[in-house]
Structures are given as C-alpha cells and as structure tokens.
Length: 220
Figure 1: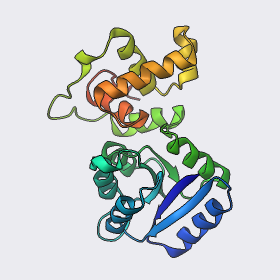
Figure 2: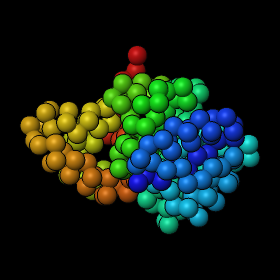
Figure 3: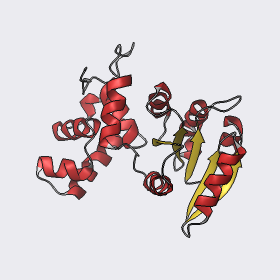
Figure 4: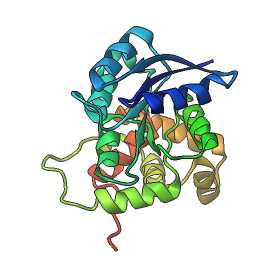
C-alpha cells in the first residue's frame, strides 16, 4: 500500500486527487495539507510514502516545504512529487534542488498521475528524458555555482560515465544498451553513485552532475 499525503491550498484539487487515488487498491490518501507548514507537520506525523506537493501555497510554499522534508533525517523515506500548473518553469529546478523526486503538471492524465506516484514511491525519479533535457537547457545553462561542488573524486571512471548518461536523460535500460551491460548492473552503478554523493534519488543525481561541472549544458 502506497500512502500519500496531499498538499494543495485548493480544496477542489485535493478532492479530485483523493477520489482518483483512493479508487486504487494499492493507494491510500492518509492526510491533506492546505499549506507548506502543515505539509511538513503532517509528513513528520504520518510518514507517508509520497507527498503530492503544490508549488504555490500561502505561507510556506511547496519548495521550502520540500526542502524541510528532504533535510529531515527522520523523513528519508518520504518522497516529494511536485505539482505545478506552469510546466517547465523556474520552480521546477528549484524544487529538484530542494530535494523533490520529480514533478507533474496538474492537468496530467489520471493514468500519468497514478504512474508518477508509483514511480516516486519506489525511489525512482520522475524525470523523462525529454523533460530532463528541456529542464537542463532552460534552467541549468546559467552561471556556474559560486562555490565548487565536491564529490567527483569519489566516483570511479565508470560511475562518472554513468552519472553523465543519467544527466543526459537516459534510463537504466538506455544506459545498459549504450554500455553493453545489464539493466541491473546499470542500476547498481547508479545506486552506488547516489550513495557516494549523498543524493536522495536520481533527480538529485542530475542536479549534482550539472552543478559539479561533470556535464555541461548544451546551449541552443
């Protein structure tokens, strides 16, 4: 059973998400939050598997709420899926920096929402290859970070190569085909890299790859 916390200041949106999720045998909505502060409080109390987090809410917004959840050592198993009306806007990359495991448009098809919850709940990131490329092109191809990002020296050559492919938007199956290894081996390398770099999930690995300079955004 995947336990979901809804965080949205619009009652109609929460009702719609609840109806969709509760209709599934393997999903259950365990709580509803109307702002970021209550989302953090409920996450600490209920320990859901996934938080569906709206970006723009009164008081503490969804990005700051995500950051607090991701930084809490007691909530390492809680995954945040950002909901937005705005598509690939500046909120998306900020959310990934804060520790979100992915994002979804509010007008996504119901099947896409259910799939997104399942993907994030199992610890994967909801970053399709086309989304990753567009997001990086739009929001990472800016000035380099003021301080260098450490960690490249802890990776093996093979791990650096695989992290670069992840950042380019390749799935584990894509990586396996490119490097002529099994998907399980590709997944093992990805997981080892995340552990060494202290990344919560694949989304954080993408952020690290670009901020560290391992991958350089391709400007248009």
